Image 1 (cartoon, helix red, strand yellow):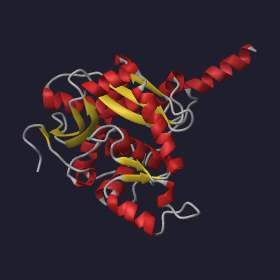
Image 2 (cartoon, one colour):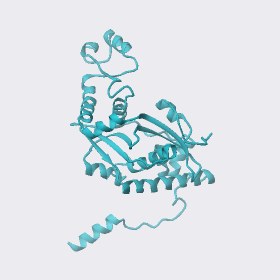
Image 3 (tube, helix red, strand yellow):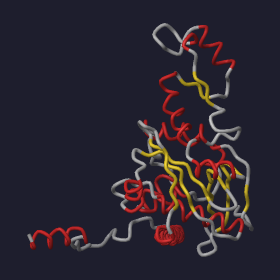
Length: 286
């Protein structure tokens, strides 16, 4: 059942992923309609595997965005609560685990990276100004896209009256490297411009205004520093084009029952890319 008006609802992460509606990560699978069909309609294709990098990002996300305050849901395991070889076993460990049920329990070596991430964020004046001004954490929105009639949903990390704030971990948070992850999907297919456009659609449907999209990016390896970025109007425009294109394609696939790519069943002629042409011309000059 689709909501007549946009709505916010309280939900756990599992409840959010189980509820009806197309999320941003689901819509990005429309890059290949057959993959979308197999993953989200027929459910014959498993979703993306959780790699160590993704696991680290998920844990960092839960720690930084803890509703009770940054880091209040994680506890470093005392060495005397571990076995002699440092394993999570023995009576001391069982007692410690039971006394801290519901918390993320990490060994000292596991805890250190997250401690350094939090320290970097706390030391970043502009990032902490936004954190302290945040009104909502993990804010879920469900709305109907007017152009296609599709039910959509998103869950925003941090919502302010002044902006949408997202938290990311990445291998490199240098401004140029992070910009490449937006511009070149083959380099790092996170689709931050896509996510920004999708979330802004949800906020506009819910509140009627357009807000900037900002991102706190924390490096997922030493020195675990963070940076704060704002996506430009140009990036947002490109993201909006991609989102609207995929929404149209999804609506067409659902209506027709055909889930092939635009070129499926056709003979497609290939031409050199802009990059290849530029390289050829440079070679000719040399």
